Image 1 (cartoon, rainbow, N blue to C red):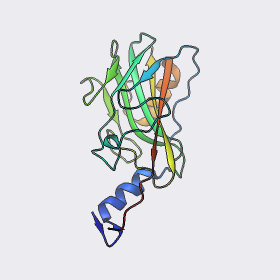
Image 2 (image 1 turned 120 degrees about the vertical axis):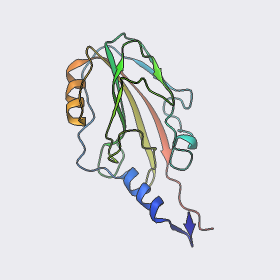
Image 3 (image 1 turned 180 degrees about the vertical axis):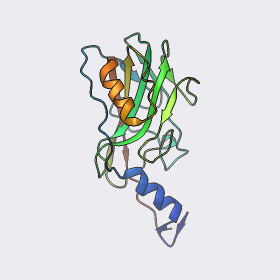
Image 4 (image 1 turned 90 degrees about the horizontal axis):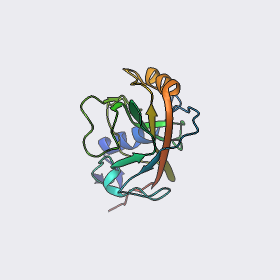
Length: 180
């Protein structure tokens, strides 16, 4: 992994891809008076996200639970607003079915994961290139499924159909490479 204190090409690519924003669409910001309560057994609001859920660990997706509103569908957007180029989307999942109250390692079959800022359909573990970054796990309760296949269409559908939303924010601090 580390040779003479330098990052391997694969790790360097991951670090650069995980921390760079770009011309990403802004995360949905619908207005709603109803708030979902979003929690995780892995970390608390404003707390550090454990290494197991970052690029320095296994890179697993942390479990999420929510309550506070019934909906026809749910969507989750995880973003890093502190990325050098602005909003970096780590995970976008839409059309979680009515009655879903959380996700763990697996998501319901009818839900769809859209391409994130790394160009992957799925979870990209946090890996800040410097400093401490805030990762917002926002759950949207929707009046209808998005049926979207692109991020832009999904975000537009989320804006139009959100009946409640809630966010859990965790932090990850940059881990400098050790020069073994």
